[in-house]
Image (cartoon, rainbow, N blue to C red; front, side, top):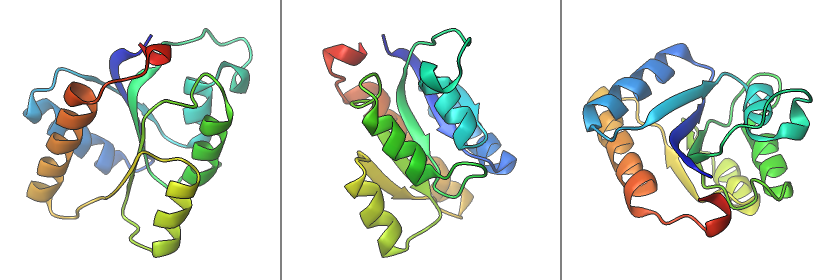
Length: 146
């Protein structure tokens, strides 16, 4: 069952803190969990990636950076789409990259949306508010995830 949680897969502590502040200011009432790299993200989402770890409820949405230590965002996305448990889980790429190959690869591997991370703080707040409003309040999840 999807909980009112969002998984932010981001290795930059400043970006994590900005995202937390932005979601708090947006008043969306969501718990933000953070995975600092691809290994942590897979351990959080896929029980097979962390044997012996308790199975968690899936978050409503994953915000996934591409440039991550240990396992990159594209590989994380590919592995999520290959697993029946997370195949339909909404994954939004939130990356500073605007490289066309990154955008195309993300969609080919099954992301639900690709958003370029703004560098301007006010714009970042607005983007996070819009993402949260849509993915947490408007988007309807399939029964497999609810």
